[in-house]
Image (cartoon, rainbow, N blue to C red; front, side, top):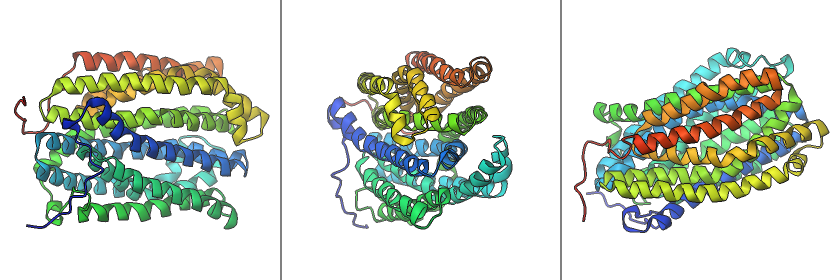
Length: 458
C-alpha cells in the first residue's frame, strides 16, 4: 500500500465543528483569492487606462466572450466539488479521489476543445459585437492569446474545486495567489517595458496560469495535502463520467448561456462607444470586488451543503444556507453603501477623462443598491450546486438573465440610453432573489445525488 503523507492542516472537518466556524474557515481563503483576482483586474485596468480609453476597452469587450467559455467549464468544476464533498461526507475518500480524476478527464477534453474553437472562429465571434475596425483588430489578437491560457485556467479551477469539496480551500489560496501575484508583476513589464500594450497583459496571464496550474496538478498527484489522485484512476470510467456529465452539463449549459447573455449586454454597451465601455468596465470591476465575499461564502456553502447531505444531515445544510445569507447581506450591504457614496472618486482613480468619470458615477449610483440581493442569489445557487442539483440552479440563472435582464436591456437601452442597462440590472437582481428562494423552500435540493447514502448518524 502506498504511503501518503497526511499533512492536512488546511482541511476543515465540516461534520465535527460548528457551522459558523466551518463556514468562515472555508470561505476566507476563497474570498481572499477572489479579492486578489479582482484587485488584479483593477490593476490591469489601471495600467491599461494609462494607455488610453481604447486599450482599456479591449479586455472589457473581450472578457464577456471569454467568460462564456470559462462558464462552460465551471459547471464541471461544480460537479467535481459536489461529488467529492458528498463522498467525503459519506466517508469514502477513495471514491472521492477517483471521481476527482474522472472530472479532470472531462475538463481536459472540454478545455482543449474550447481553445480550438476560439482559435479558429475568433473573428466571427468578435463580429457579433459589431466593434469598430480599430477595436476589432486589437480585440482579435488579445482573444487568441487569452484562449491559449484557458486549458491551464480550467485545470486550476477544477483542482481548486476538488480540494474545496474535500474541505481544503486554503491550498487553492496558495496556488491561485501566487499565480495572481505573478500576473501583477509581469503586467507592467510586458505592457510598458516590452511595449506590448494590451497584448502584454494577455501574455502575462498565459504565463502565470501555465506555471501555477501545472504545479497545482503535481501537488495533487503527490498527495502531500492528504488527498491524492492516481494514474490508474485516469482510465475512463463510463459510469462516473456519466455522473460528472449529469451534474456538470446542466450547470455548464446554464452558466454559458448566462455568460452569452452578459456578452450580448456588453454588445449593447459597446454601441455607446469607448467612454461608456470604460465607465461600465470600471464599475463592473469594482462590483466584482464587492461580490467576492458572497462568491467565497457561496463556494463554502456548496462544500458544507454537499458534505451534510452526503452524511444525511439535511437540517445542517439548511442552517448553513441561512447563516451564510445573513453574513452576506451584512457585509455586501455595507460595501455597496460605500460604493454608492464614493462612485465619483473611485472612477477618477482609474482615469481622468471627465466623461468616463460621469458614466462610472452613474453606474455606482444605480447598481449598488441591488448588489446585496445579487449576492444572496449566489448563496442560494451555491447550495443547489454543492448538493448536485444543478438543473435547478440553471433554471434560476436562465430566467434571471434571459427571461428578465436581456429583454429589459434591449428595451430600456432604447428608451433610456445606457442608463437603461443599469436599471435592467437592478430589476433582474431583485427578481432573482425571489425565484431562488422559491426553489430552496419548495425544491428537493437536500436529496443526495451519489449512489451511496450514509446512514442516519446520532
